[in-house]
Image (cartoon, rainbow, N blue to C red; front, top):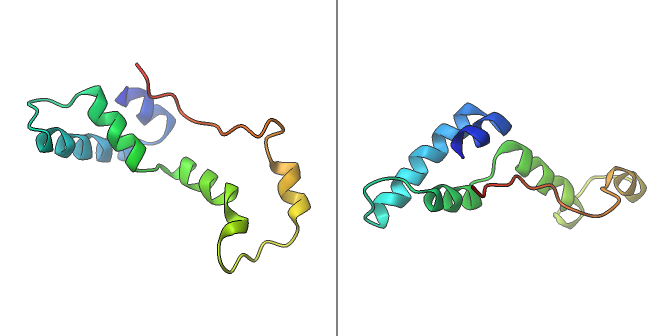
Length: 90
């Protein structure tokens, strides 16, 4: 799972996830990091691509939005309106 995340995002992001998942594991008094710990951390911390996608999706709702035309956004949007998500299930 972490290998796939590192390949799709960055090695730095995966390393940060390992450390955060280790903290989640120790908080629940676990002896090793489980997949559920990694999934929990993945849901809490956003990588660069998901962050950019979030900003693009909600840019009209932010205060001080300086984007000019809404027509450009409609052309760039996914025709099905589906959000691209990385599968973290094993």
